[in-house]
Image (cartoon, rainbow, N blue to C red; front, side, top):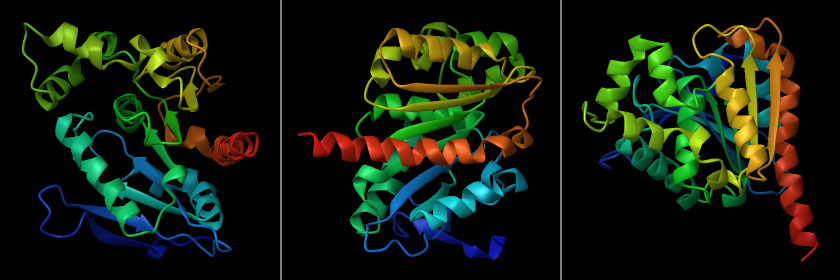
Length: 261
């Protein structure tokens, strides 16, 4: 059984860099001569690098499996309500670039794993940086921000503040931010979605609608829906191996594509 002390805290990029942030880091186990991969975990609203979804018992097997499969797992502290604004995008760029520059990560093995705000944010980042992540795994993400702030109005103020929106540009900006309206932009990125059918915080249509948009655009998507599941990390317990196989499978597809050229 993995114990939490396996995690350490590092500053990425280097201390003194204008975008440096503390990150919780899990090191990979023996990689059998292969350069390690990287899974960036983006937590939900209100979280931090010391309080994040992936640290919970519901993900214990997944954490262990990722380490055993030769991945660094990094949890950057982008702020409790960043909603992947411009600074968060730049910071995540810098964190990933730092890991690559140190020679610790294979650039073809970078993945994003986000929950709730982190799930929506992972998709927002991937749309802007389609050549960076090999895949995105988004658990109960919001994919239509314009609809979501109407459904859950308590999040209107933090999202508006994070992105510097005003009444004149808010609707258009939230629509432009929403992954559901840009399915074609994810054509190169395999996407895994997991959502609870009874989620009262982020209604299940966010993943249903985004999966449909990806399919219409010819994208690669795996959508899992849990009957009766809510907005709760415990929902992920039974899907840990499914997530692991998705991440490993995207890399196997890459290897097959290279072999066929």
